[in-house]
Length: 335
Image (tube, rainbow, N blue to C red; front, side):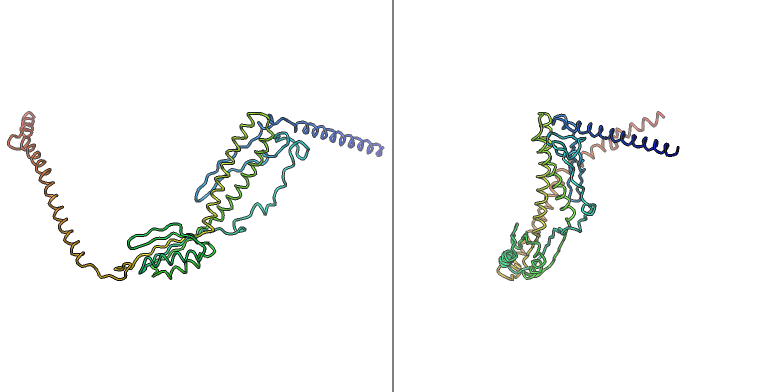
């Protein structure tokens, strides 16, 4: 009796398993049929809202797009279609290991922008110009700009960053150093953040180009082209920022300000010009008295008439005529 009960229970279990397998196969077949669709209908379901990118000297922010919305397809985009079937969405790439996605900036080569400035006191501007030109050439750099005055000359030079320290040390041979400053700015995080975002944008660009080739509807084509233009503009902007950073990282900037020593010219030491000093003193005295004379003239022209007007008002109101005084006296009597 017990054996019959066990046999009956086993038969019911096998029947339930077979029914479940049948339902699963039917569901998979329905999903496969839903995976096929035209480009125009499927693209309308695609969500490719690219996030705005805000650039600042201090921080960069970007909302990453949904990776599921960019699975390529031969006949059109279908977010619900099964992966790995010919003519439909290919399987998504395997996720990268967690260790790779969590790399910090310390895992990469550090990127520094280095700048320096030197103030010098020299005896000859012509001599320091020759020295600076030879110094820049010996270090494989170039003069970005220069400015020369009657008693000073300024240079802004670019030196390969690998030789920055040696180049700064040699500037003391140009003259007497009166001031020196060195700055370093770490742009490692900013640099690799830009590169990572640029790679993401390029992947988006390639996929949009694939969608554009398979688009069969004009509306979808225009929508894809608009998104592709935005992504291309972002790529050009980000690439430009990376190029500028590379230029600042590879070549350090050094500013040199050379000034002649007091009482020195290109011909050497010169005594103070006593005659000129007396001439300047006499000129200052003359200018002082001329200015004082003009002040008196302004007082005579504008001050006296103003005083006369004030005196007239007082004479009419409170003086001999006393109109205002009489009015107040009458009001007081009435009270």
